[in-house]
Length: 124
Image (cartoon, one colour):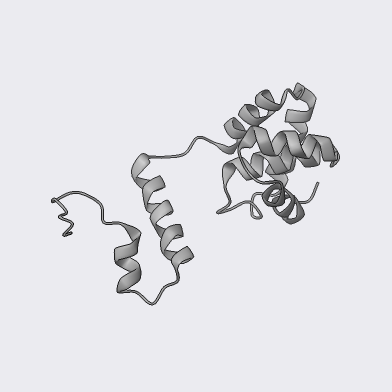
């Protein structure tokens, strides 16, 4: 079966893997970055923190503390998923309570391991 691509349609990442020496994860990461650039500018990280906190039902003082943690760790958060960063900063703001970690990961739609590794990079 022959696949025809019309002008203007994006090529699948598998086409780039066939003719590139890059590994699959590097190609997918580059495709994701391009897609983000095409979509436009992301909302600020503060919006993600507020959204995750609202979904998890956390109070305003915890949100303020999480925003302070993020402000102090701007270099450590570059290039990371905003959902993971929001959940990690909120978890650090709640003093690493395990039950909160699970709630935050579910509210952000990310894994617990991802939140923990992002929290390790940040300083509370």
